[in-house]
Image (cartoon, rainbow, N blue to C red; front, top):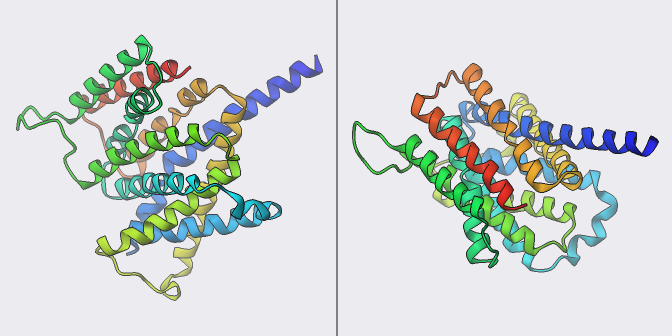
Length: 296
């Protein structure tokens, strides 16, 4: 009986961790937008917030520092891909409509299935093909404008960044499968450090100038600290959740992020989705559930 109670408690904690992580990622766009309104670009705010995250995580995992320089070189590829994934996502949610950005990002299960099929040589089950068709149909409905009759493609830079972020997330998943020898701590630090490296590399292509840290006000510092805490808490809670719950179930639970983002964007940014966006988005969510079953 005690073992059953402990197992149930562990399950509840894992589900709570996933929901908390989804909550963090569903609202993290808002403080980034506040930074943008205060004159700090997404690239620069990403660099500083992830730098703070690395510092906090370094203090939290200080006893594991000896393993920092014992990682295989393949972790660099994971860091760069994951770094672009996170940076592109931040830039997209700052300038784009939150829910359209989120839904374009959540096409990632489609790219994951394709990469798993052609790169990992994994056999795609029948409901995996169903997921591909549903996700493409959802994207078509959401992006197609009957008034112009143009191709159903992302309509601005933010949406292209969101699409590329979802592709990067899919590639990150594939690389992570190959890197099952890496610890969760190593993978987390790879992501955080990757954002720092990609932010630096992206700076020459950004119109923003690099500010001196001294120009940041107390408000800047508090907002960046809040973002860093959200990033750290989301990473650790999600890692705990996926380590205790099957990946397919965890991916479905994490769709709660879309609910959080929908509510937050409505009340905080006064953004509203059109009927075709609701319909297309619903199909994309349904496809994500089918894709989760395909990866079971």
